[in-house]
Length: 74
Image (tube, rainbow, N blue to C red; front, side, top):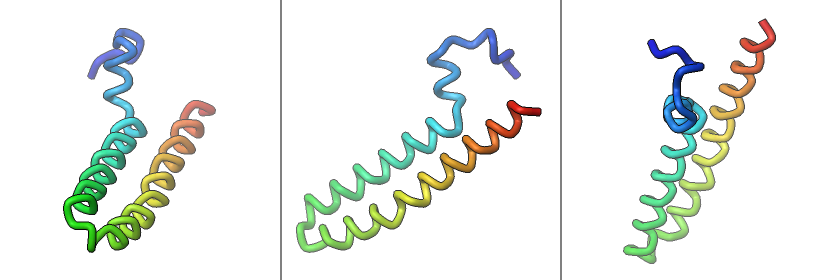
């Protein structure tokens, strides 16, 4: 495993679980929004699914941040 202090800022960013979850959330939301644009009848369902997924991603990112803070205090 790479020494964390030897990694560049960009390498650290792409090894961050929080950042990867952010990218996944953005990708899923954009794909679903694209489906809604291509199929206007499904736009309300797309908004519902995006609205349901957002709190899950926020909770996961928050839990990882909490875990990282707990590990930093030890």
